[in-house]
Length: 72
Image 1: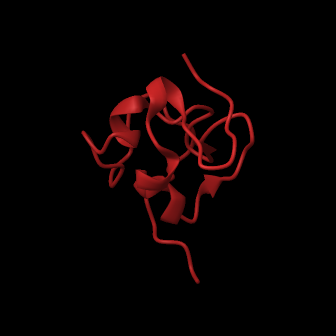
Image 2: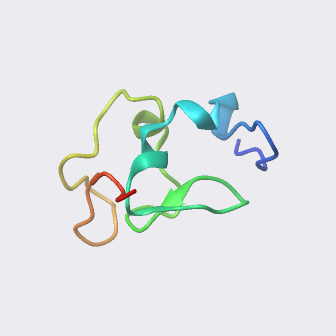
């Protein structure tokens, strides 16, 4: 179940937002409803938890977006 984000926040199944690598990706979209990006409406839990890396196209994603560090 996806929880709404608040300051200091949690996402699906209480995964702390600050630990997800997605925050540093240039395709990440900052959405108050939960973490999403150009490739996924809802980022898969296995990516959020670091069980798989999004360095290649994953079945079911949109477009050909993969993890790329955001420019500072």
